[in-house]
Length: 117
Image (cartoon, rainbow, N blue to C red; front, side, top):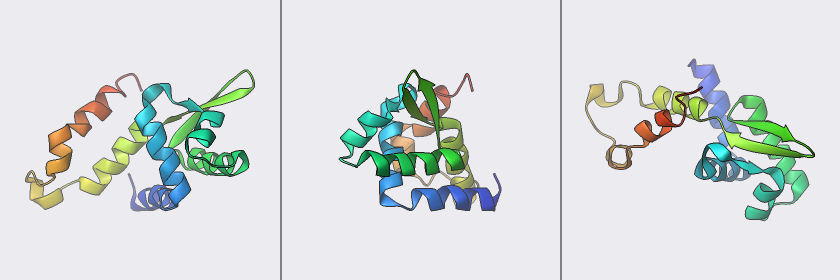
């Protein structure tokens, strides 16, 4: 990942509403949620949710799949993994220094969910 790409993703996540949506979709897992459920879960007006979902989709942090009249959104776990890898690459000269990450084994969980990607 290039630094300009990482900056674009971090900028998108720098808004409270978009970060809330992204975290909700990460928690939902690969199955994701439809736009209405996202709006309802975050007590966000549908038009606002739509605006932020479009922005997150545009930068590649989430993807939407149309099913009949609804759009079902899910987090782009491979993209998230790439961003986390970029941010932590060569951290502390290769020494284990991220106890919260190591304790919950998030890297293994993220990569297990993207094996088919």
